[in-house]
Amino acid sequence: MRILDFNTSVNVQGVSGDRKMMQTYISIKLFATLTRYTPASGDKYPVLPGTTILDLLKELDIPENDAKLIFINGIKGDLTSSLHGGERVGIFPPVGGG
Image (cartoon, rainbow, N blue to C red):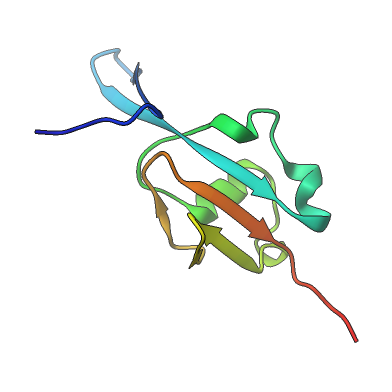
């Protein structure tokens, strides 16, 4: 038995119209100098299951080197972390100080 949460919806797409792809949603919060990349739909951003943080950065046009600290549901992640839907993603840039 598979249970879908409220953040999941079915989106039928495909080259010939016969392929089904599951589209899910995540919440994205970008901090400091990255806020300018925040999508309008940041509270409910659509992704396909298996999308990695690196894939997400590319979609949002965020340079890979600008994403230093990544949290997924409050747990440290990295560029290879996969998203499956329903996650809260927070991304911080490198921080300097003295």
